Image (cartoon, rainbow, N blue to C red; front, side, top):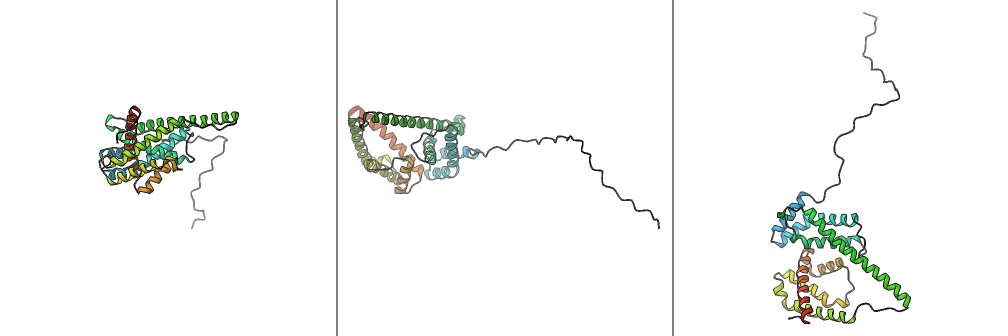
Length: 258
């Protein structure tokens, strides 16, 4: 037997540190982007919503496939452009108001014209918030100016013309009487009539109400009628149009034909 030691493979020598390191190749590929909320499915859902004449189906499509996109759009518009002059204490309430406004404008969107839903509703939502923000800024500034004037004079002034208030009160009395009489011709569905009646009662009890927040009113009406927000929005649109038409008649003639 040979006394020579068997040969075994040796590990490679350790690299000598020369004080310089070879740069590692950079990883290729896109950076991670934020999760998209206005997706192709939202575009499709809007088209299906507009194509449907079934209110129940529309409500379901909106609640399950459109609402979140509108919520995120409202949130981004508010924070991106800093629309912070509000009538509400919580920005969630303002987001809700924007969502309701976008819902009102859904039927005005025409996808067949080639406009992208995201672009359309971004512009609509932004314009709404610009007006909302500017109006509230003016109100806050006017309030400060009035308070300063009152401090100088040492008196509390009554704001607004009394005759204007009386004129508006008279018109709203006409309006509520008109809705009571024509509610069955204005609204064919029972749940729509239920909502219209609840809103009309709020008009009648307006002087005793302590609710001025739009979201709170929506919640109040929803509790009274047990219907979804889209139904309330639809009925509100019809009543708003009738309100404008009747007010034009009242302004011209001084009364409303009941």
